Every structure is written in structure tokens, then in C-alpha cells.
Length: 631
View 1 (tube, rainbow, N blue to C red):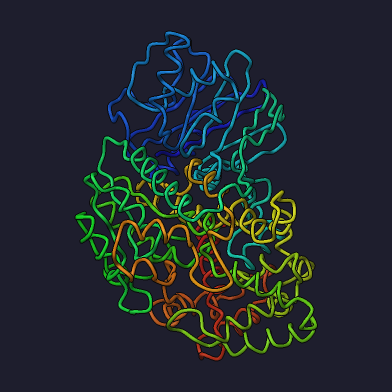
View 2 (spheres, one colour):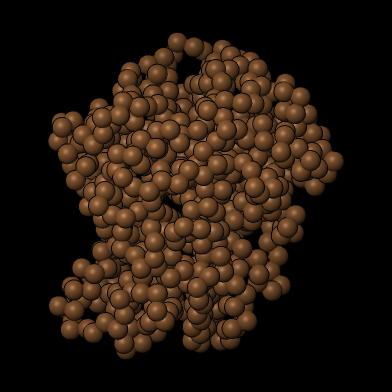
């Protein structure tokens, strides 16, 4: 796992080692074990190394093939690199010099071209400079586990693992995008191929993009994307296939020259990973909360006892100042994501890093095995379509949300009713994407300032809805799942996992997002995943049932990795929040109305109405804007 950065200047413009060094230094947290640079004419490739495989100097990047025709800088892990080495050797007689997965990339690209990326099983963001043809190729893994940002002005192209690299560029002034801020404030994220900054985008997941010497796109190819075509309808067959495939995938992900652990909750996904890892000497790490409604250490302890794996329970909320944590999160995410579970994940990753350098996580299990309650909500809404007039649904939704004033516990009934009815009003084609909104349209006139007032009636879920609508899946629930896999997962969950873990130089591997698991999940009939009644993730529960006798694990309700952020804002973070939301709320103009922000904070602080989703987003954004000076 590493950080990469580089640029392609227009022909005739001299590259700059100083610029490249500044870009890679900003990524030092992603790769504290070494750094490297490659400069050739108009191109520069930079690398920060977190040593995982072949931790000797032989694994140093950027790395070239023996003829130095192709040079690569790469972030990620390729789990099938040994079999690809054998294939390359058999086909060409190539003599490898290292035991590092990186080495297959330049020679594999020379041998197979773009077909290389479809052969890779793993997570990656890759930049390859073809010296012979003077072309730069960028590629990102199938589902978007690893990030790759692009900043382009005319014929000058920059790329990097994180936006903070671009902020080191001399004489560059970045401006916020009102349209993308609209997505951030209302959803908590900006989308899988965008950012909150103008001229800064992300390479979409599963994409190969090639540029010529003048920074013009030569080709742009999507080599893989999730799909759902039901081929398996037997629960027994499906659970057997899941168990066998996951065991193989977990074993493949154990390749490492440094210690590995597992992030263990009381949930189905992480429990399956841990049972699949029996036979490997890997410790388990669990976050523990003082509030019983959030704590999962009891269920995790059952897994540890039954598997015989060493177990570390990490108490959340305590030794580090909350203000320091939120500032660190704002810096780590570049204010591109405001998922509040990142608060707990930050603490967990920090402690895990004291023990291991690599950790397995259950990310993706909910999206590929229908673990979210939104799937049931969408089905219920579909069954009720036409019963409630839109105006009545809107009125009920607003009434309920205005009475949502809870600070402790999980989602209260008022919020559930409010969200359901406000989503219901959009109709069957758009309901599913609306359940997760942080702000609804009726709230925006009081909040949006001059720069954003024109966006109040613009649906921030347009791309999300298009992903669902354009899916080739045959049923509504299949389309919703594909939408979440292609849009929500790489926009939110994978951004959180990557940025928070890499802030601590911790590599996170995700077995449920191995293509073997994703394609198997896509072949299962949705009746094996969720139903209108009963538990979700039916096939995963069936697989777990064969591994444990614990009813608590098999039949446990989904909790999610959440924290009581509504309470934290008012208590531990009160002074910081009051500074941003009241004393200095004018800083948010002209994007937002300062008095609108003050009113929301006052209502939240006085427990009149909870606005913690939006306030958390705004706090991260405010801290980041203050630190970077971006306006």
C-alpha cells in the first residue's frame, strides 16, 4: 500500500523535481517507509512506500521493466501476482528480480496492454509511462477501493492518491464547485468520479484511461463493473459456494511480509472472515463503546473464543482530544466525505496500527449481499406507491423530521418515519437513492446562500438514480443493489476506509470486494439475500450457521459502525462546533447563509431538532477550508 503522484506537462515544458517532491511529501502518511521519483522529459512519477511485500530496497518504486520501456508507480496489492509471474515467465522467459507484486506491472503491460488490468485480482491505482509511445496510462481497480484523483488544466495533467497533493502546487488557486458542494452537503459525499474542487475529478472505478504527450485522452475504457444476473436460487448451493470462495479469498489476502489482523465486529461479514481465517495466526480487533446500543465487543468475543484467535478490544472515546480527532479526519479526507462512523474508525485504526500493518475489513458485504434496511424500505415503498399523495407524504415527512431530537441511541422512530415519507414522495424511480440524504429539499432555502441558491431544486441524486435506472438488472431490488455497488460504495464506504486507515499507514484489505466474491454475489437470486420479512443477508447467515452455534451471531441484527455523533457535537466538541456554527458562521458565506447555519446549530444544541448529519459535514468542511485556504 502506498501513495502515488505525478504529472504530464505539455510538450516543451520542463518537468520539476521540486514540484514532484512536494506532491509526494503530502502523501508521506500513505508511505512512510520510502520514497522514489522518476522524471523523463515532460513526465514525472512519484511514489511513497508502505512496505508490505519484499520489504527490501528491491521493491522500490517507480519501477521499470528490464528494457526500461514502461515505468510504473502503483498503490495497492495484487493477490494473484505469483500466478501472473509464472504466466509471464512461461510466455516470455522474463527473469524477475524481486518478490514484489509491482514487478509484474511494467512487463505485464508491455506483454498484454490494457488486458493486463482485467487479469489483476486485487486493489490498485496505477500510472504507467510508456516511453516508446510517449503515453501515460492511468488505471483503477474494479470497484474503486484505491483512489486516483486527476487535476487537469488545458494540456497540463496532474494525478495523485489524494487531493492534498494538488494543494502543494505553486501558483495554483483552487475554487470550490457549487454543484459538487451541493452533493457533499446533502449526501455527505460527492460521487465516485468527482470532487468538491473545480477541475479535479476521480478516475472512475474499473477504468483504464490513456493520455498522449499533450494530455489529450486517447482511450477511456471501463474494464469491469458490477452486474446482477440470477443464476443460483438454491440457498444450500449458494452458502456452500460463498463459504468456499471466501475461504480461498481470505487465504490469498494473507500474503504479506508484515503482520496482519482482522477488524472484528459482532456482524455477519467480519465473523465470516474470521472463521475463514482459522489456521492463520491473525489477531482480531474490536471497537468497544460505553453505550450498549453501539457496543459489539460481546459478539466479537464469541468469534474470538470459537476461532481461538487473539482478541484486542479497543475502547472508543478517551485518550485523544475529540477536537484533535475531528481535525485529523478533516485533513485525512480532504473534506470529500463526512460519514460520521469515521470518528470511531479513526480510533480503531490508530490502535490496530500499534500491532499490525495490514487489516482485513468487511466493507462491501452490505452492498453485495443486501445488508442495508434501505432495500426493505424501497420494497415497502414500492408496494405502497399511489396510496399516499405526494403532498401528504411530504407533509408527514417534514412533520416527523422536525420532531427528531434524539441524541443517544440509534435512528429514532421519528427519523425513520420522516426519511421514509420524504423519500416516498419521489416515486419508485428515485426513492431508493433518497433514503440516505443528510438534507432534504425543504430545508435548503433557509441554508443555501447566493452561490448555491440556484441548486435548491436540483436533485443531488441525479447520477445515483441514473446508475440505478441504467442497470441491466431485471428487478427493482437488483437495480438498487447495482446502484449502491457502483455509486454509493465507492463514493462513501471505500473513501472512508482508505483515507482513515491510510492516515495511520494501515493497509486495509476487503475480501468481500474481491472480484470472485462480487461476481458470485451477482449471480445469486435476490431471494437468497433479502425479503420483506425476516433477517437480511440470508445466504451469509446460512454460511455462518455452518461455522458457529452462536444464535447471537447468526440471528443478530445489523448495528453498523456508528457513533453518537449528535451527542458528541454538543458535548465533547461543543466549543469547536460553537466557534464554527455560531461565532464564526460568516465564514460559510456566500455558499451558505450564516444565520441559517446558526439556527440549525441552536436547534440541535437545545435538543429541538437533530441536525447532526449536516453539522458534522459542515464541521469537517469548515476545518479543511480554514486549514487550506480554499474558498
